[in-house]
Image (cartoon, helix red, strand yellow):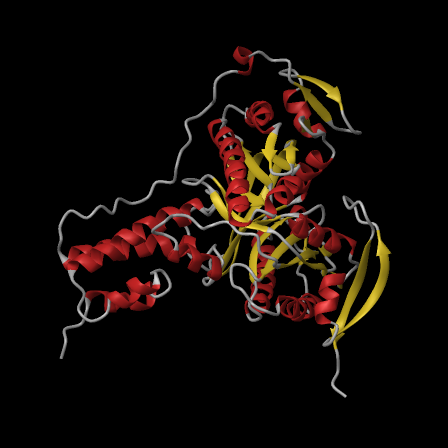
Length: 514
């Protein structure tokens, strides 16, 4: 009888975190060299999963499945990039070469912006397509808004590098809007040990988005509340009603040097000194203890992709045609501001259950719930079908998931927060088409697997057009699912940001068999 491998005792923990060939190699009675390979892989994966998640997640107190809430005060910055769709279309026809060229420009852009945010004392909380949400936490110096404004001015100056990008189809100009708002927001870690999510709740998060959408390209726009914090430090001109555009007439010396040296998460040292199986095993267990909680914030299919590509530390970019679903979940997220002391956890637990049920409905049909993000009311839930896992019937899967999610939301009973029990409902949009898929961000820093392009933006606009508990789909989705689903034509509809009216359809239900 063969002696038990030291790794056998932790096999259930390793099976999802090792590449397939390495997992096979560890069986039998692996040598210390194989154990060292496992150790080396896990050290690399540790760095990757930390780079993939917001540093707002407190890893020192993190227990998967433990719903936590915390009110935070500071200044939020929301950015949006104009011109990306043209840049993508200019490269899409070039296949792999075009994908690499597009990623090169995006990597340069995101690396520049993330670096400026970091050294200006901010923290990148999340990517939403080509948009960014950053937080400048309030400190004893009470200069969070000033730091955010200086960061915004530095970012707009850095955009000069992207003013004239040469592409196979001509020159493309990238421009950026920046919105800044000061206030408070509720952070919550929600979900189950298998799949967690870090969310920001409260009306002040939406105010940052409104500051951006009411701003102008190449400018930094402040809400009235943010303006009051720094009106004596910078010059302004009036923007849209209630907003103020910063005038950048500062010299380099007046703008000042960067506030901070960027900090990375501190991770336990796991350098192996002794080539002893028991010593290496202890180091591997220590790495697992660190990786598993933070990895629960990454969807399983994306985590698997990171595991398999860890040796290269790079996921190749691509131009697939995924099906994208946006779900606006209304009723619970915006209740945060009504919460009486002690009610925040009750709200978070209700939101956590809703998120977990929606995620289960998506996973059961082969989709990926990528993230929960902010919206002007409620929260947006972004779902992919077809990436990173490929299927031949993504539209059918998305339709089935949308109907299941609608039923889940209809059956949610919101808790009474403050003195009000909110009405809970959803709005869903589904679209299919070409997109750009890649690791977006810094190659060796903060980054995420992301899907970008007009297909994604259109899915969001379909969601916005939908009514309560209504599912709106594009014509291509309708063509793919109408053999099995009841759909109603809504005729031609003009959507914000679209030059031409679109034929839209409402997904009703599954066709009954006769």
